[in-house]
Amino acid sequence: MPKGEAFLAGIQPNGYNETSEKKTSEKKTSVKNMKTIVKIWKSLKTNQTNPVSTVKTEQTEDLSDGAALINQGGLVAFPTETVYGLGGNALDSEASKKIYAAKGRPSDNPLIVHIAELSDLEGLVKEIPPMALKLADAFWPGPLTMIFEKTDKIPYETTGGLDTVAVRMPAHSAALELIRLSGVPIAAPSANLSGHPSPTTAEHVLRDLSGRIDMIIDGGNCDIGVESTILDLTAEPPMILRPGYITKEMLEEEIGPVSVDPAIMSSTLATGNGIISGSETDPSSKAAENSSSSGDSLREETSLHPKAPGMKYRHYAPKAPLTLVASCSEDTEGRKQAETVLHFAEQALSEGKCVGLMGTEENLALYEEFLQKHEAESGNIFLKVIGSRKDPAGIARGLYGVLRDFDDTQVDCIYGESFETDHLGEAIMNRLLKAAGQHIVPTEN
Ligand code: TXA
Ligand code: MG
Image (tube, rainbow, N blue to C red; front, side, top):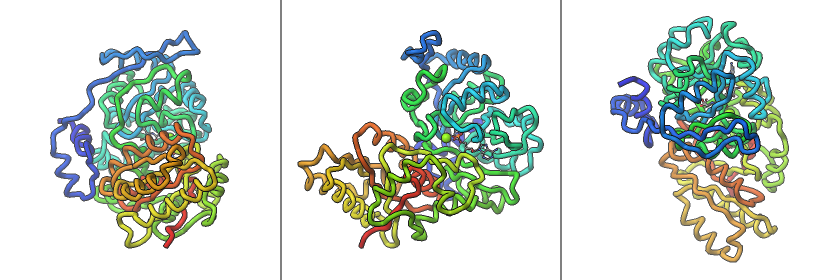
């Protein structure tokens, strides 16, 4: 069995690798769920008012159509194990420009180059350090992106003007096949409009990019749900620029010490060490202020510049301002957080606002009690259960879907519980804090 399939087996389902022991045993399990069915919404390229039709097929030949589009300089959205990507020929500067235009993304924010074989790396990067080979052996195909010095083969349009290039081999059969069939590396950011949560279903992509791209390959729900871990191999020691499913511990087990971009650390420390941003008395107004800023709230608050250009932008944002309630010690089930969430919700309801609640299964009874108490205002309360604290992988998988669901409601403000920042929790809190514009308030006693 190819190693990538073994790795994918390790992340499906509920494959949160908490210990290296578990990881090893999971790697040995056989693959059951490797996706083989590929449905495609084909483009009606001539009809610009309705350019993406709902013609579906399950023929893998449709991947060839996708590959042909990539070769003609077109854009094809495709599933990966993390989130959907918006792909174009990474060697074609015009294709990269089109990607930025379709997403409405600033052109200084580099794209990740996706490959299907380790040998594809040659020619794209100046040097393949031994560490990269070790990590590729352990985690590719999989949710790890590595940064190398680029060669001239990769245009600056693809790397946002940088001399380095981010490369990843996705663990999804449709993605790998699309890359193989097109015969070129595929540059692909997440297939969302800039500023929206990353897409974890083809429907999310359709909503954001219909009319802007040539094709969407539907591979169902993404297994992981948060974007890949980014590791800069040009730093000494290697530095994590974005936390993801592959944790610092997992990387260190393979290659020894790994550092973390201090700008990222400061955002996650906000929960654990009580560094609280914003007003504590009026969270919704502060969050609204944050939400109107298209800038870099992390940088504003910490004066640290994230090393991955994309990490400086306010991403993953639902339309209504989100306020998180920080975790506090001895509150493992998050009960105090849920109580604080409900306190703010009560206040918002009394002001005639429509309120969104993001809670965990552990506190469902509390939320249900609240809903009963406010039965008369039930049309003004939207509760989304994000999952169980015992299942961080489940929370990661559903996270962006929940944030997008709030956009389908009329909520004026959202209050949510937060999570411990260990293992996958670090990636979850990193995304949630960005969605909240770094706005997190303490629990109330
Ligand atoms: O899981 C993923 O990584 C998904 C799937 C589609 O593969 N892709 C993804 O791409 O999340 P995107 O473009 O949404 O995020 C790429 C991040 C950005 O924050 C960007 O600034 C950073 O990677 N990045 C890319 N190239 C870089 C480089 N050479 N140096 C530093 N950061 C880089
Ligand atoms: Mg993105």
